[in-house]
Length: 37
Image (cartoon, rainbow, N blue to C red; front, side, top):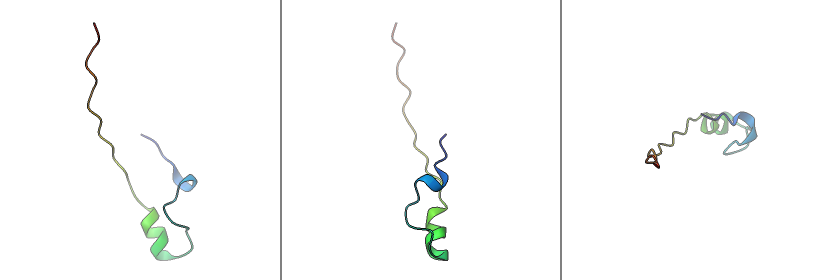
């Protein structure tokens, strides 16, 4: 998990609407890699 917080907003936090757009959770699912034996 990574938290970018104020470092990477989608849009400037200049209005209530923009602040709402910046409140988000992004989930990336990755397929596990096979064991190399």
